Image 1 (cartoon, rainbow, N blue to C red):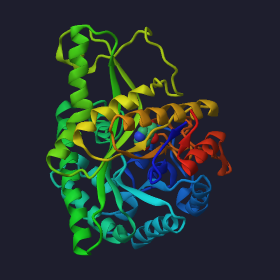
Image 2 (cartoon, helix red, strand yellow; image 1 turned 90 degrees about the horizontal axis):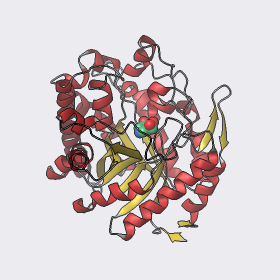
Image 3 (cartoon, helix red, strand yellow; image 1 turned 60 degrees about the vertical axis):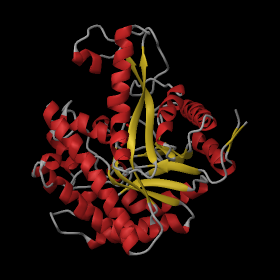
Image 4 (tube, rainbow, N blue to C red; image 1 turned 120 degrees about the horizontal axis):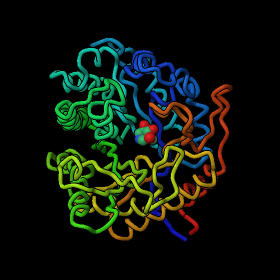
Length: 406
Ligand code: IFM
């Protein structure tokens, strides 16, 4: 039996674009059409059904819930803020609060308003200023009801997918553009962190907790050879620790949000820098069970990444961890195994204060569309019927008691 602390945050996460539906002013909306991808369309219609969805959240004993604000709804045209959208998000937050659920709010989760993207998005020299104007409006509207903020979701995933691999909008394939966006997102976080704290100080409310949701993988060498050893060390620094190092150096993390799913298996056949940084194992000599998208399931890696954060001496919240699968038994096994890994890291001194499963409900998985099923709640996209999965009920017991039967 494993016992988690009494005041632990338990819950699940979503993002606006993936569940709300009809985010017609977002860059993804137009890109889905241009690129011939599956359309997000009405998604889970969570924009309309959030009260009902939060009743379910309550029934599952979650005491925290992570969601994101859709910038393209709040500021559909440059400098024009929608009171309707702002009021909507106030209502969303209050709906959580009256149910005793701690809202954790993300300001940027992959999507941008079309006007922002059409003027060079995160490459425009004005991008940080534009993002801050939006953050200012949202923070002032929500400050009295929100204590936890994530400025940016998975900056490293965003800049690599959208500016290096070219598989997300705006489909750039340039190391230099990626580096510029990396720098701008770091600046955006640092400035947004300072702005949020300043607003809380001005209206004299308790210091908020501000972070990013940082994507981390367990980086594992196929063997202990010198080349793999070097490659693992370099990637560990560049992929996992470089961003937190920078943000900690600028004193702009109150906690660390960790999104963990899988491992990254390193097998390098040349000393060329490209191989050292990017070559991954293509053999099947260390096979593991995989999720629906083919990602390795590697729970012990969560202990590994959490221990790597110990040196920062900051609280950690698992802001995302989950599996897409058509077999719900696998989901419960995944949750159990990862919670054990979290607890192991806690026993070794990492101050983990919460665990949020990805995702509350099945949703739009970006370029993969609707096939991957990550949800604790099954969504029938034809009828919008929600069905609570067995794994959700088992997780609900842990949320209620803080006890995981080993
Ligand atoms: O669906 C995404 C989410 O938007 C960000 N983190 C990873 C999830 C699963 O791919």
